[in-house]
Image (cartoon, rainbow, N blue to C red; front, side, top):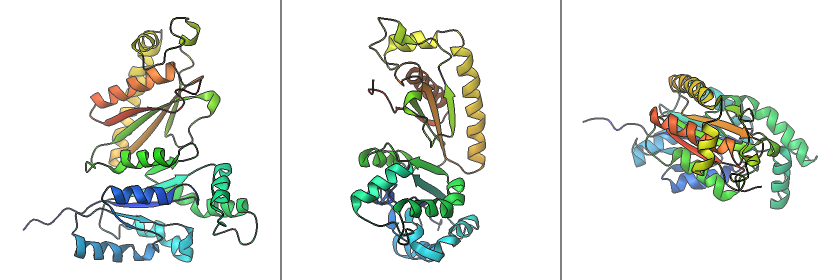
Length: 289
């Protein structure tokens, strides 16, 4: 009798107020067996119990955070030693302090590390505790500018398919005047290309319109950049797969995130799809102008 392949284990951690509960709920909706606030030392026991009751193919998600107290310190060791026998993805949810403070104040909850001081003090202590885990994470999601529905979409995008062997590449266009996406693995600047904003018949259009895309892609240096940058990303992508990383987030910026970055993001995603990767383009700032 052929043994069942082991399902994926997703470990969700991150800053208080960054959206761990939302991520857990979406994973549950996607068919994962979800356990919240799990002491890391109990990871092997949870996997064993799920194997016995649900079968090895059942995918599992656990939420681990500073509420676990001293147990939390063992998470890196547990993951590093592969104690669960499953392919494990570590997801780290983050947001800027101002957003985390606003969310916690709206929820009227003290921070678990606040210790009678300011909420911001608790967040600073938490960042110190989580620093190594953030650097180890397979997927970092910055939720500063995401609402609940957008975070749900990001989780579904990452874990809503049983296909686990192909790299998922997300190209995200943005405007530099609105800030650089902090969860990007790579950032490229398209402001070396002429701006369609100054072409009257193109100003009202976006990089998703064919006329703008044709204009941007035909400018001097655009084709050379695409050839070299996609070649670079392909090499990095293969390295990611060798190292067990399955997510790549590439930010493509221009001044306002409307024309050049949008057109180039779409083209990079298309070329990565041609190379066999699961790729899609998202446009963070489209519509803000």
